[in-house]
Image (cartoon, rainbow, N blue to C red; front, side, top):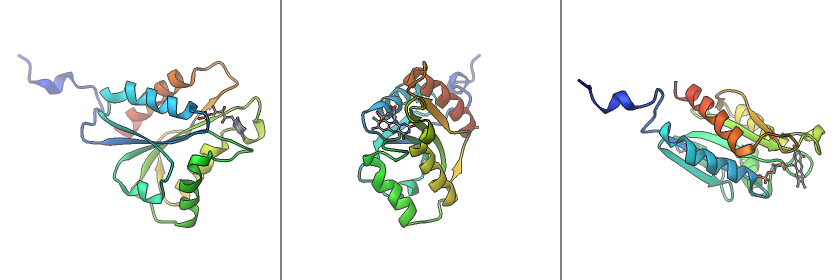
Length: 167
Ligand SMILES: Cc1cc2nc3c(=O)[nH]c(=O)nc-3n(C[C@H](O)[C@H](O)[C@H](O)COP(=O)(O)O)c2cc1C
């Protein structure tokens, strides 16, 4: 006889945790990846919020969620315009973020911008680590000049990342 609904739940399922995906984007690729993850990963984390970085500051990291920073790179290794305020806040209004656990998706184009590949995301990673936040897993980089579909690759990476983060 079945012992109940728990048997059907996937390993690592986190019903009470929120995954907050913070999106820095210029032309929408990073948003598409975040939304694809939101649609696909609700069997692991039912509560997934996708928040554009516009208007955010360091206070967003004090909201008690698991964070996924998903951002492209623009200019010559710069964070997108909609991510500038949040990035500046991490640098200029530093606070200890030792309770924060996060993952990082960095989109870029190694063909056209080899010297600054994915640096927008890497800048967020360095700033968060400086404030004591703990990155789970490796940074996932997506190269727009390659063959890999950003949404499919992002989902596959995120499912492995969530297995680590929820273990
Ligand atoms: C004007 C411009 C500058 C860019 N600069 C960089 C760069 O310095 N490094 C990099 O890796 N990618 C760079 N890229 C590539 C983008 O990061 C990449 O195409 C990404 O997928 C765009 O995502 P988004 O639509 O979310 O902004 C640049 C793209 C444009 C259009």
